[in-house]
Amino acid sequence: AFWLPPHMADVLEMVPDDRCSVVAPAEPRMRKRSIEYLLEGESVKTNRHLARFAASSYLSTLLDDEASTALLSRSSRSLRKEIIEAYAVLEQVEDALRDAGEMHSSPSTLIDLCSGKGFLSVVLALEFPAAAVLMVDSNAAIKLGHVSSRPNLHFLRADVLAPGFGSLLTSSLEDLRAGRPLRAVPLAGGQKAAGLARAARRSAAATFAAIAPAAKAPPAAAAPSAAAAAAGASQDSARTECPPSSATSVPSLPRAPCVVVGMHLCGPLSPRAVALFGELTAIDALILAPCCLDKHFDMALKLDARARGLDPFSCKVEE
Image (cartoon, rainbow, N blue to C red; front, side):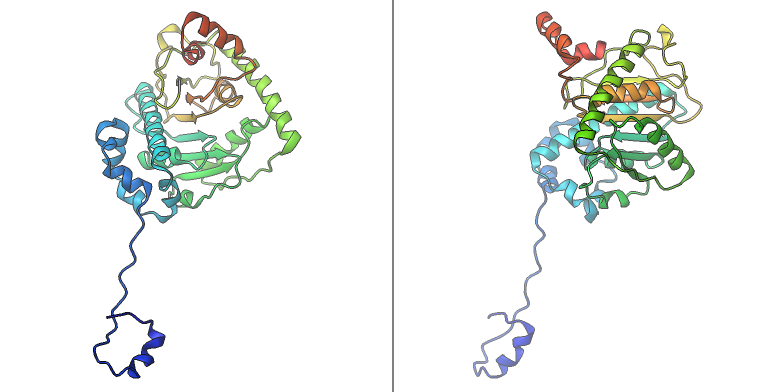
């Protein structure tokens, strides 16, 4: 037996051998994605973060979403790392909610700074369907199909190092709460962007120096993917007036908290996130996992930590 396309059917009438027959083509086989291989492996049984992902109620929805295929088709190693990181941050968000009081089972807003493609944002949107999740990134090449698949997931293309980003973020939060579309903003490039980065680094350092002596965050457990994770919370406009009794918890809030998360914020980005937390009263908690310390104003800290035989990231959290 052999197969011929439909437009060749007339040829069969000219073939005298009645042993010839046409067979239907087989159904095309779906190519396995990295996520399917991962879910069939042993790591989902031994790692608590992967196990939680595999047991999640929304897993089938995520797997069936064609717009999310790009997120789930990366190399197995990268995908495994990204899932573990996302659920490590999720645990920190849940801890912040418990500290905020039993009245809050979900944050009002989650902001993922420098989100990249946004796997963490997707997980947060699925875990907290009642919360608005805002991805923030300056990369214009990010495909946003998976964003439109989640009604509570939003994307803001913006440069967090730009001087006016704090005001933009505040207005964006107001737009989300009012159900208005987010505003598009032009981005700087080239030498101007480099200048903004330098200015933001100086501004972040100054703000951090101003708020750190009066309100130091307690040491926090390190996330598996990063050397340190810092969490802090406050709603009062005077963030520096934190009594010792509240230093290890988030004050009870009359509304659900607004939580900012930052995974792998390198160079000036982590100090910038700390500065935003110090400046904006709309932010109630910050969960930060930097991937490296700033080579400019953290050099002395790294040298001191090395001399004392300590982890420099732990020293940064203490600072």
